[in-house]
Amino acid sequence: MDHWSSAVLLERGTYLRKLAKHGDGQASETLKEYPRHATMLSFRSRDGEAELHANFADIFYVLDGRATLVTGGTVAGARTIGLGEIRGERVEDGARQELRAGDVAHVPAGVPHQMLVTGDKTFTAFVLKIRENPEM
Image (tube, rainbow, N blue to C red; front, side):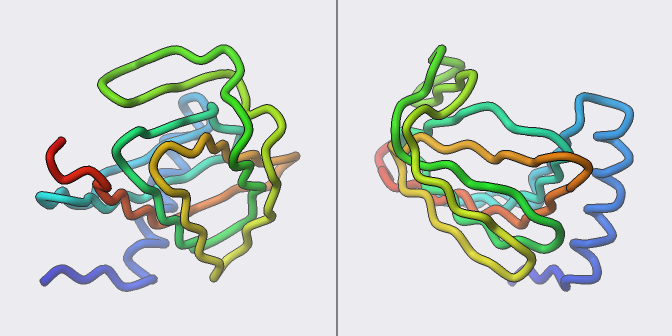
């Protein structure tokens, strides 16, 4: 059994914020990996790349801040970075949903998605990555 209180996650988020400030505006850490899923913490103070995971669904639980999640459409400038992992410049023609603290969003495997963070806003989320193809 693993447990992370919101206080602990937000404290780790503060640490990731410091890393992001001295880097490219984003930082994440894997909290724990399991046979068919993984838990992560993610901080952003800028837009993320477009992503598509062929074998993993993402569930975002927003701890702090706000961002716009763009899903569906296509990945512009798509490039393969690993087995079943695509990144790109942006998601084109996707649906937009604003996410705020306390919100939960599920992005199924195979769906393009991108987090947009505007202005001086920031975004911290607990991320559950679930393997949808157990044979992979």
